[in-house]
Image 1 (tube, rainbow, N blue to C red):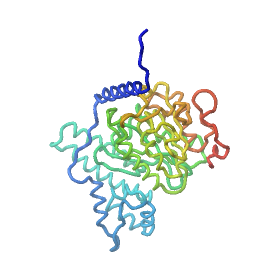
Image 2 (image 1 turned 120 degrees about the horizontal axis):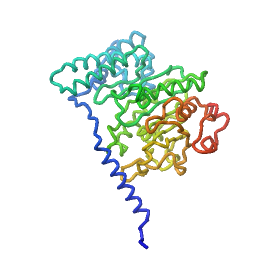
Image 3 (image 1 turned 90 degrees about the horizontal axis):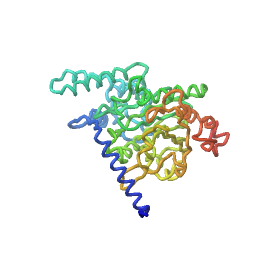
Image 4 (image 1 turned 45 degrees about the vertical axis):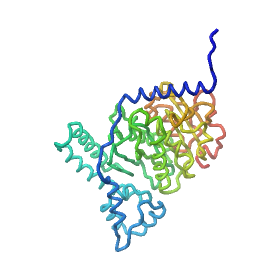
Length: 406
């Protein structure tokens, strides 16, 4: 009989080799290159101008000051003064954590108008390749859509592949706030997609969740943020197998969360690589974040939910047809994202994802996955459906917790 070495060390190296092969092969699918620029970006230039600016003879506060400090500054101004700052420094104000939400919307509308003008010129710039001109045209189309009067853009940066965040609902008056954190290939040009891929894009995810939350609890004031305000990995190459982008994204996510108005409970809905961002951010989340729900996760950079070091409830789901289950769940030398969040050993509350459509279909209307997300978003925890038989994912939830009061 042939003897096989099944030592733990050998098993780890076999898994590591498999992981490397998977990601190297996937890397050949191509990368989405960032747009090159020289000198400061438009956002950096706007922030620099702000730092040298004055309002009635007094210096403006540090653009990176604590949100509470910036909120006090804007509260001390008249409406006319605030609007003046939004017009003079649109990108700085539009991305400033601590600036009033409505003022950020106004500033980002001004920034979008300017960015659209730049791209309209690029469409006909003969120095660009045909591909570059087509990309400029696609950006013009996207900016046109974002400039619709009903859109509320909370963050916008046209540099590189671009960053953007949009709000659905009234963020200032919300009883519950949900934040959708998407995964790879998230950028300006993929922020919103056609009907065929609508629910795989941040806008489609957030719109779908917002509608489901309103249906689940019509009396609850909800707001949902489509948060594509970090530089995600491009494609499923080696960048997606490391936490580099997630670490930067986690800082930005926590900055957003600490600047949200009011005191409403916040739930995070993290898809694919977005769950890596949420996992890295977990130990620094503000206390108002009550829930972290991940779907199609490659791992959360932790061996168990308890190792995330967060007071938030951790929920996980995966569709039976999701290809992510074939990626080895381990982390060795910075490669890979750790344990499988839907495994029993991880310790998350595992939810049903019945009828979800593969890796990108968790927000499709009519699915258990979306209904479960909506239940969590409005605090109706007793309505969620657990994976498998029984109600193990609801264990330990008191009546007060189930009603969203704890």
